[in-house]
Amino acid sequence: MTHTAPAPSPAELAAAVPGLAEYLRPATLLNPYAAQPVPGASGIGGPALWPVGAPWPHCTARHPEDEYLIPRSAPVTPAVGTALVPVLLIRAEDAPHLPWPDGTDLLQVLWCPNDHDDIQGERYYYGPAVRLHWQRAAELAPATPPPPARSAAEYLPQPCALRPEQLLDLPDRDDLPGELARAVAEFAERRGIEYERDHGRADGWKLGGWPSWHCTDLVPIDCARCGARMTHLLTAESGDDPDLSLGRHGELHVFVCPVDPAHPVGLDIQG
Image (cartoon, rainbow, N blue to C red; front, side, top):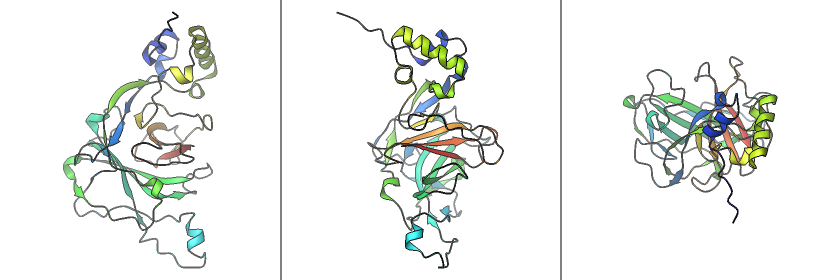
């Protein structure tokens, strides 16, 4: 009987290929499952928290669908907008490796549940508009967001609780410099493994770590405010729980500026 050696873990692979260790990144695999999140706990699509008396955020952008529903000559009232929907609530203890601004211990990810095609400048993007809110849990209270004026069903997450799992991530070869990518490919060939499949980059709902470039190859994401190369913050995946469909039933990546996480996010969909 032939026994196949198990694929090396990311840490083992990084130790075996010189120069690869510096590309190890901590990540949290969220492992969502259909259940109502405990109020205040990390979860997807569940109870929201918000500062008492503060208005709930709305999207005032024009959506592509408006071209068909609202004549160009008709007046638009951007002050009303569409209420954002809660997508993800994360407490710092469940993802301590994120770039938490001083004094914050809770991250809420909200998005406008409609398509947008003009929020990434010259770089193509077609999907929900995402906003990050880094907050202090002690300053928040349970909130009931208003329903969005218009929404696409595929962008409304079903409530999910999480089983956070801490791990280490290595990037796809597109994120490696050429010489190191070749060294990784040669090592993988000698071991009889496929780097992209067996190297241990976690797929699924994930915080931190590295994104997948399985559809477009590498698309560098630079901060629109300061020009810094942005880092992967979140992957939201289609299907299963919480039953979203992003792009062509693919995954949405959210990137954050390493200089200042308050800068506008970068977005990419691998459909």
